Length: 151
Image (tube, rainbow, N blue to C red; front, side):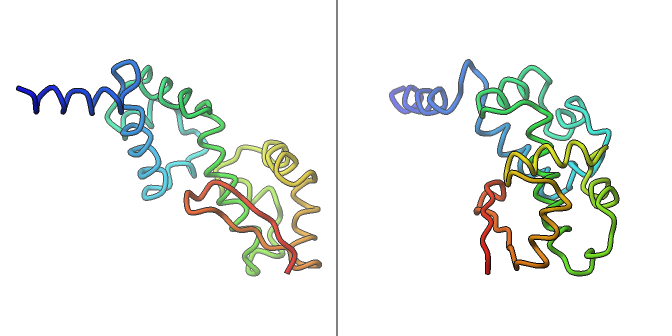
């Protein structure tokens, strides 16, 4: 009986409002990385819920508790992928809108908004910085945080 109470207390401490936020976010992160769902420009919250095996309310709540909305969550993965494509020398001559589309974005305007937020300038300026000033972009273990350093 005491072991059941301890188990329930442990479970309730991981859950917020009866929703296993950590579990849902762990599943979402794993699927975004393994299946690269963010590359689908038409990805919806319902599709992600279907992949995770949860409902829209639980996923929205979990995202909110994690400090993001659905679009920002997905675009974080897209942004990271865009940065990786941009840093790849084989893409040096590829037009930026093509790299944006390959990353799952619908427009370069959205990409530029995220880049401006991270670096203070547009994708074209970032590209120039990468290739003329040896700027490198690194990501944390979580794959989300970015740092830019001059080599």
